[in-house]
Amino acid sequence: DQSKRWILMTTAQTPTNIAVIKYWGKRDESLILPINDSISVTLDPDHLCTTTTVAVSPSFDRDRMWLNKKEISLSSDRYQRCLREIRSRANEVEDEKKGIKITKKDWENLHVHIDSYNNFPTAAGLASSAAGLACFVFALARLMNVKEDLGKLSAIARQGSGSACRSLYGGFVKWNMGKNDDGSDSIAVQLADEKHWDDLVIVIAVVSSQQKETSSTAGMRECVETSKLIQYRAKEVVPKQVADMEAAIKYHDFPSFARLACSDSNQFHALCLDTSPPIFYMNDTSHRIIGCIEKWNRAEGSPQVAYTFDAGPNAVLIARNRKVAALLLQRLLFHFPPHPDTDLDSYVTGDKSI
Ligand code: 2P0
Image 1 (tube, rainbow, N blue to C red):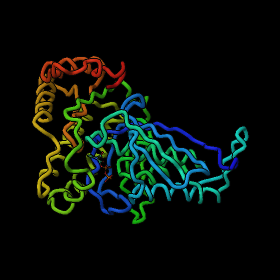
Image 2: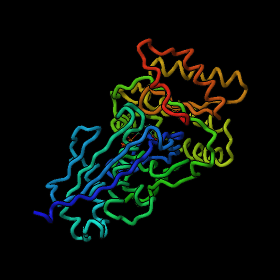
Image 3: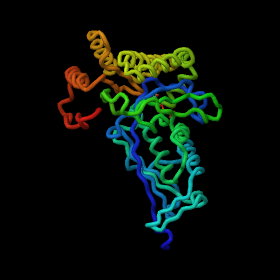
Image 4: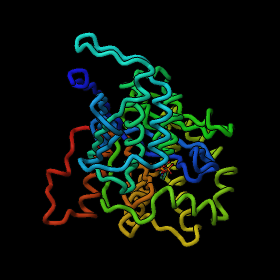
């Protein structure tokens, strides 16, 4: 059947983001509404990103998805919710050269194939779901000619994975927790673009690329249910931390930025310890990295490097400039010499951030 022989596709690339004021805890599990605002920095698109190609064709008999070349199920609520939200906003698409016209109504019966690839370890605490779900939503929105602005798309990506809403923008991004029960105001906004503070250099020290034992989703649920400290942090501590972090970013105030980022990371891991049973995302190597950075910062009299750890043992280190980043790499290689079998070429992933 000739009429079934066309295929239309689009590719998008989305970097991951690293929270410097952490999201931890939901007030609504199904809509993914958080109990506090969070702030993140989006990484360079050259590194740690998801690339997703989405395709539509009348010959596809169902929606299918591949992640890192392996087929995965799209049946989870999260994927289904994002797909439904994007499909319901699809518009007419016309490609005159190929002689293809898809009307608004056609989208209801057409199926998509989604091929997604992370150029970094999946589910190892490197925010793979953030880049993945943001890219999923963005690529589908482009394919289906969805006309919503990035704020609206961020509210859709949020329903795939909370932290994904922050990956739709570059630079520094705030996820407003919002007040509404329907999540319409729980969206991400850009605080400053990627050029605003571009002398910062982010170094990610991969302590382990194993998948973590407790997923973020389960970890934060157990934390909300059992921690006596989590509501205090969300209500009494984070609002000031968020305001102070916004000011530090606005004025390029690295000492304040570093102090806030480190203390917020430690606070988040303290909540994990306050969970029953306790959750340990960091390991001995993570703790030794914290010790090195704290000692260095104290010796300098003012912070040179900020550290932050997500739901895993890997260290995200933010150096105030390239010169400090070079010193940081020297120190890391001295204190944590690579295993003799390590391919040293893999240490250099480009001349920019990582
Ligand atoms: C963050 N994390 O702000 C925090 C800090 C991990 C530690 O967002 O259940 O994968 O999909 O909303 O977004 C990881 O949690 O959890 C996360 P869901 P998500 O980046």
